[in-house]
Image (cartoon, rainbow, N blue to C red; front, side, top):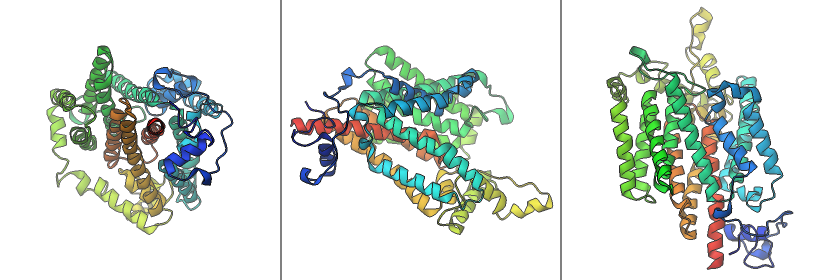
Length: 462
């Protein structure tokens, strides 16, 4: 068997030529891509892949950037783990010679749209409402996230690497949950739910847990050993309890969307497994939720809820956010400037000159946030990015079926459910530049990359 990124079916054509031909359909005599300097002599198979330094750095990055492990255990801050993991990962990636990790394999629509979105954000900086805010968001944060997207997606060499990083993502969510529940207590009155935690607030926390739950289902079904399945089931229990403690209504809707997707579309896992997992989550949720929790959930569609009636409620904020976008349709108010717009451009901003306090609200909707801060083009690019990420996972499932990959076939819809959970949860949160999103997207693109290799192998052998 020949690896598509290493040797082509026709030994006269360079491997990189055949990769482009096989994915893009161009004839070989019309492609002129130079042969890589350090090709790998033999294909690497999932059963021979081991953890290596680059993959360890990527795992550490997920634990830090998404799981916030350094904030859970402040002693880790002494060694600046985020900077160490990021810089070391970049250096290892740039010096790696594996053919599967070459940058050419990331030339997919998702990457193109992410780069276009990043460039557009940079173009929005000069005309921003507060330039320093935008400069910090773009150059101090987002560009680092985009670079690590490339490192994460490139680091995987086979589906087992994607599975390992998915396990790290799940483990980081469980660790965060356990630490939070051990350090924060629920009380009565307004303290019936969790408040501001480490980095995340309760609503962010709920969305984070929802994105991890489909991975718990995946490992409950696919773990080869009984103890692995038991640990995955216990992880789901812990995530569900933490989810209830969050008391998030947006998170509840995100969970409902994920459950619906799992029941209707996750056919790669037998129905009995999906039903039993849904039953486990339901039993834990019902058994741990308080009366106050259910009263809170019952107000989701209430006409008297503050989100509908007050000027600081979500509907009024979203309406003002749309106005900021329409008033600044090309470049918006600048990345990271939604709250500044609330304090300077809203209809009640003038109250401040009379000594009346004005709340500088967050957007509480990722799409409104993007539209207001980067204009209509930025919003279109962001939506296109999400659509291409879902398409990449759909393509992964198709290619894994073609190649007979029993790991990728159920892993692709699990990551799809995770991304869906994020998208629904983000409708009520300001998570446009969150590492959580771009890590999930990177895992999806990484899976698309390696399943494309396998599919091309299968076609070549046939």
